[in-house]
Image (tube, rainbow, N blue to C red; front, side):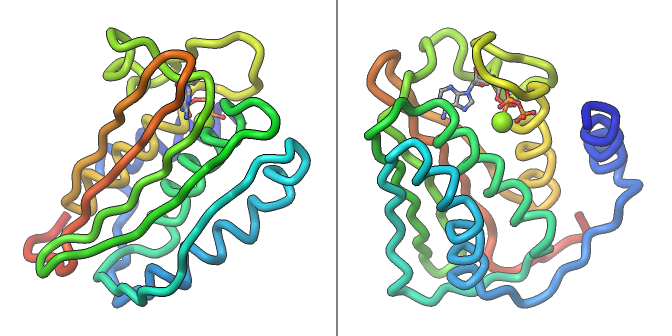
Length: 172
Ligand code: ATP
Ligand code: MG
C-alpha cells in the first residue's frame, strides 16, 4: 500500500498521470463518498453530517478529486473519538467551489498544521496509515488549480478546507 501510494504521489507530482477534466456533479460525488465512509463512522458512533441540498458542478477530474476528499473524510473519522461529529460542506461562488471537512476530534498542534501535508508525517502512532494521504490530497488539489489548508485546535477538532476553480483555464 505504501509503495502504491508513493508511486501515485510521485507520478501526480511529476505530471506523469494526466488529468481527465470533465463537468462533474460535486454534490453527487460527495454523496457517494459519504455513503462509502458511513459504515466506518457508524462503527465509532460518529455523526457524519452532510447537506446535499445544493447541486454544485465544476470542471474536475472526478476520480482524483474523489480520492482527495475521501482522504479528508477518512482522516476526520479516524482522528475523532467515539460519539464525535464530522461535518462535510460544499459551497460555491461565481468562480470557486469550497469544500470543508470539520471534525470534533483530537486536533493538531498549531505549529504542526503545515507539516501534516508533507509526505510521511504522522503525529500519532495509534492510527494505522502511511502518512501519505494529505500529501496526495495536496498534490491533487494543486493540480486542479486549487488550494488546500487546515485550521485546528488541539483537543477540540480540525477543519480541512479546499478551494477549487469551477472552470479550468490552463492545463494542469
Ligand atoms: P494515510 O492517510 O496515508 O493512511 P495518515 O492518515 O496517517 O495515513 P495523512 O492523511 O497524510 O496520513 O495525515 C497525516 C497526519 O496528520 C496524520 O497521521 C495525523 O497525525 C494528522 N491528521 C490528519 N488529519 C487529521 C485530523 N482530521 N485530525 C487530527 N489529526 C489529523
Ligand atoms: Mg489519512
